[in-house]
Amino acid sequence: MLYAVLHAVVPPVARTVWRPEVTGLDNIPAEGGVLIASNHLSFADSLVIPIVARRKVAFLAKSDYFTGSGVKGAMSKAWFEGLGMLPIDRDDAQAALHSLDTALEVLGKGEAFGIYPEGTRSRDGRLYRGRTGVAHLALTAGVPVVPVGLSGTADLQPVGSRFPRLAKVKVAFGEPIDFSGRFEGVAAGRARRVATDEIMASIAALSGQELAGQYNDRPPTP
Image (cartoon, rainbow, N blue to C red):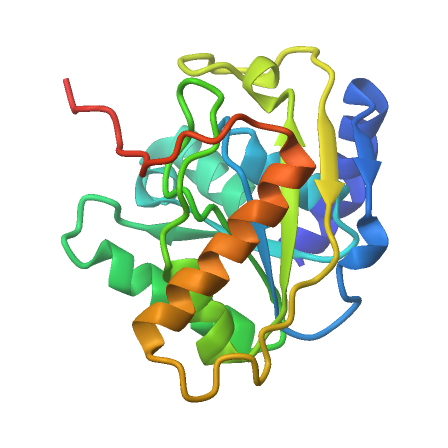
């Protein structure tokens, strides 16, 4: 109910204010489980994609956003739940496994799940090598992957900024990638690597980013 209310209000207002340039919306299947795999430039990415998509897209968000106390904590929880976000404790040693389980649960319900194959935000604007969790989900759940190329979101909400700014944002949804039957007889690890690299190549073509050629790691904790 809360999602329906927020989604009826927030997206039209946001699109009016920021006027994002969106292409390829019809590439998102109207129903059924699907992975929305995007490059990652800003915290705002997880808001931009659900705002422009025509169906609910679930993303993971830090559990801290759901556990605050008092009125502020309650409002934060309501806001993120209303946007379809799902909590994940990133400091938990098993967080990666829990996130995959959560994603498979969402996909199993025939819903859309958003994922950033790079793992964390790019701090220099380059596109980093994809981690194979995205392919594991696609192959295990048997769902297509819609690649997404974002640009301008780093200016919309720069790292360290609490509120979004006016910025030109582009969102390009690519054609769905279906891996059904393509890796029969191929070792699981090899299949995941090849599928992930194909997904990242599609994202690169949509975003136009320079390839980093390596994995992206989280910045050290101060």
